[in-house]
Amino acid sequence: MKKISAIILLFLLGMSVTFLAQEEKLDKTPFPIGGIEAIAKQVKYPAEAKEQNIQGKVLIEALIDKNGKVKSTKVIKSVGHGCDEAAEKAVKSVKFTPGVMKGKNVEATVVIPIMFKLN
Image (cartoon, rainbow, N blue to C red; front, side, top):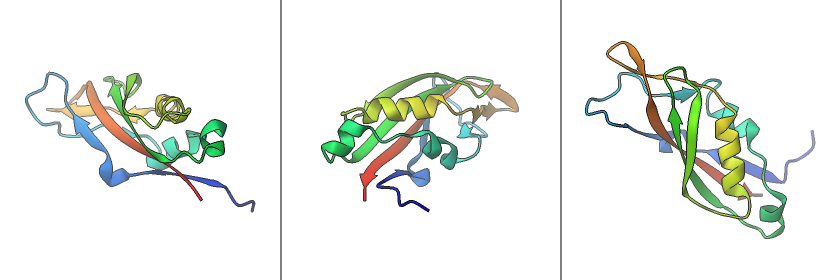
């Protein structure tokens, strides 16, 4: 098996959830279908970032609708050099389980950290 020159890590424990216009806590937070690995498989380390030895953590805020679809994303911590766009694209490509409150699917926001690290 060919050795990969770049490792992209997602910090499951670092994944946090915020709520939009909700005062009550969610019963179930949105989570990527296929787990964090589903997002990791979609992340492509940008050539520019590799060439310039750019590493770091990108934080993506994603609004997940009632059906688990990513409605919008926003970079809240940037690394630049194409990493932000790669992280957003990966998050947008994955479907999530929706947030649940009082037995009903609700729209919710999750913050997903994506670590770009070269070997």
